[in-house]
Amino acid sequence: MSAGAALVTLAALPGAANAAAAKTGLSFYQTYGTQQGAVRGPGGQIWQIAMMPPEFQGNPTGSQALDEVNPTSGAVNYWAPLPPYVGGKTTLLAYDNGAPAFDGNGKAWMIATATTFSGAQSHYLVRYTPGPSTSIVVKLPSTCSSPHDITAAGNGWVWLSCNSAKAIRVTDGGALRTVSLSHVATLGSLAAGASGSMWAIGYNSAHSPIGLVRITSGGGEAYYATPRGITARGVAGNGKGRVIETASCGSTICFESVSSSGKLSHVATAPGRVSGASAPGMDASGNAWLFVHGSAFKTGQYFLKLTTGNKTAAYAFSLPTCGGALLSIVGTPAGSADGSVWAESVSNCTSIGNTKTAYVGGMLRYKP
Image (cartoon, rainbow, N blue to C red; front, top):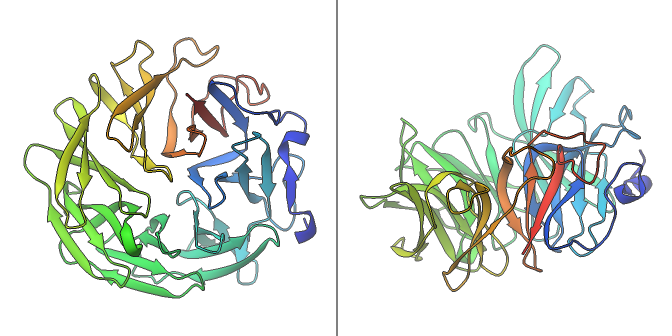
């Protein structure tokens, strides 16, 4: 597919969801996602890594793409191709390391695993610019094993974690800086703090969470041990200074506000008993979102929002024609400006060809 034909509106393709404003409650959008999670882009659209629709699969220029859902109209746009290989077409790229992150210039960054025909693996960063459909490929250092959780910082750069005591900062031009950490063995998902800083849960060598790590935009490190009585689960931030940590507090989840000096202040507790929950995501306004399996509603599943005023609101739903099955998602929920929450579904109980009820390889939206 040529660069000039890189954008296709999936709503115009057979079997795709209708491009219409979302109704209240749950809506599904067929997007051929690869189960790497969804993220809000700089213009408010919701993005995910996807495969090409059947009409374009087998294209010699590659079969992986970005899908963009317009949160106002529901239209699904498909951008392609992502670079399928590096070198002389002998090293294939697989975009299987999580959702993309957008830098301050609106360019999408993704981690890709490169595999040669002999099975040797390495990792690359791919910067893709929707519209002109141009890209650059940057090799990651071999000291960054199993890179994950590429995340946008508030200053327009992006960061990623390594499966070691390292994190990497990436400027919008592709310059890399590796930061070695002295207090933890590994980092969890990253969250944007104020002034280009990043926060993450830190883990010891046994992969038990032990505290919060803050990395400044210049690469400085600060560590804050978790107080007794709670177990850190995840952290979310919007790059403007609001940072929220979620933690296990007995059989439920508590929300802790994180100050710039790492002090935790308890602000809310999730209703009911919680048997499982996603990592938290935060929308641009500062509302934190979780996807929860718990006892607060008979349906057993709901989205939970912590508002900027630190009040909790829960939104329950049942899956259509699913016989009581529970939904599963990948990644963290992403909020849009109209108050909706988005996620990529990994459940499988109806045919993908049935666009009214199918949510395999697709995006879901809950609109309160």
